[in-house]
Image 1: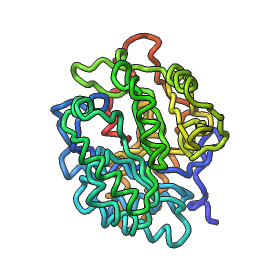
Image 2: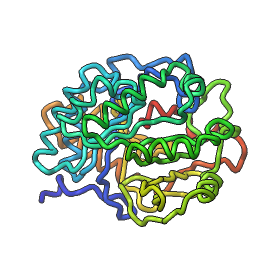
Image 3: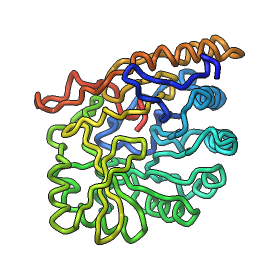
Image 4: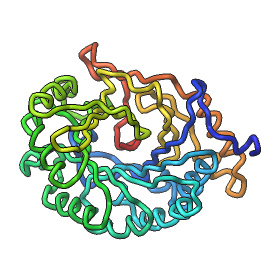
Length: 338
């Protein structure tokens, strides 16, 4: 293997095999922990084209990335996004890419589930924090729960494995811990709980008030189920237990009560071609410039990727101990990609 195509290894000897790519900052929801209600979105010219996204992802795959997760915003609102998924399927066919997947709010799954399966997607994560229609409308501001439910049903019918991601929100979905668990168990779906993260100004929302520790959540869960700790990892930050009574997996992503960075194998690309080596750090590198300046030569792009990986930190800086949310990570989650 040539030096230029050698696998990506960060300064802490971690191989980078997992790439998360945001294809748009736009979304058809306005979740209170993710973005403000009146967002100003990026001009189209700043976004990578689908062809540029293809070239960028293909370059990473050539450098050893085996798992590609497409995010947003809401990735399925990007115009012609299915053509991108179909193009990426060639890397699945060659064996270079082991998994192509996406994280979605579920609003467009009813339209796209079958086509995503045909393009090689076998698993999707759906962000869903409540089964209560009124609360769903409140937390998403613009969302419609029946539309998401139909999307989940369509995904399961198409053969996709569905995992729910729920953000743990104090005094919002605490009382739905068991309802969400049972909802997933009945459909053969796993469930991952995520601590709310301090990212971006939300206007009037108070993240300190939103914070529900997953230690408390887990302790409550253990009152009704037998929790078996699992050693498996899926390339992400979750730690898993299996519920003996249902057989399903429950994941916990705890950036605030447990630093999950020691085995980090991933980087994130924004829809404008910025690479964030860590979700919880502000350090960023520009890949759009070499991508556009050298349309027929991937060498400068590879050099820029390697230079960025060489700056990947050991861990993140999320911290609520100061009881304030300013001065931590200023960008919105929708900018980096969920």
